[in-house]
Length: 273
Ligand code: 2HA
Ligand code: ZN
Image (cartoon, rainbow, N blue to C red):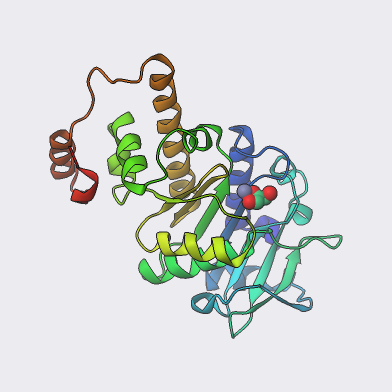
């Protein structure tokens, strides 16, 4: 079948458009990657035309030989649904994990996202730590999370706990907490390595004064995680707009009770007094 008839491509396009509709993607902000299943790539094999090999700029060993659907560098998310074969494409990773070639889309000389090193290193780590289940990496520039990186200390423990307290479902949606990377130059191997180290433990990593990365098994779970974290940040900012003191909140003991009731593990390092 054609790539644009496949469920994975339609799911990818819908998620990109959802992010645009929610205001997460000004101009060319943000990028998305999906690690395609072998059965899914076989379904669209007739529609693939391999191009030349290029250097990734990092070695993504755990995903060598795999195929990814990715957004294009400089492409606007608002155009993904209108011209998916220009704004997105499918790439194949070389057997040594250091190169890629375009096999579909990214028409008219386009290239994969400028954050390809971060996507592939994060994809590698998440593939390994989830036993192959994790497939989606999503990056965008959500206003409320970015705003918090000017106010809260850039500390995993403080971001996690503040976000958990904002909605009862937060600790159930991201019991492993969020990681925080200090401000760094985007697009390269250094920020990719810093993020992927935090992805060993978390499914969401904040880039200070820049945005958020989320990882998950499918488009629903990954978008849902991203959206939940951004909404919690919005609530926290609403509270902070009114007061610098919460009159009451969800306490560490409440969080322990919640963890028992919902069968999740909340690391004690986040349950400080
Ligand atoms: O413009 O979001 O981090 C794409 C980006 C770079
Ligand atoms: Zn960005």
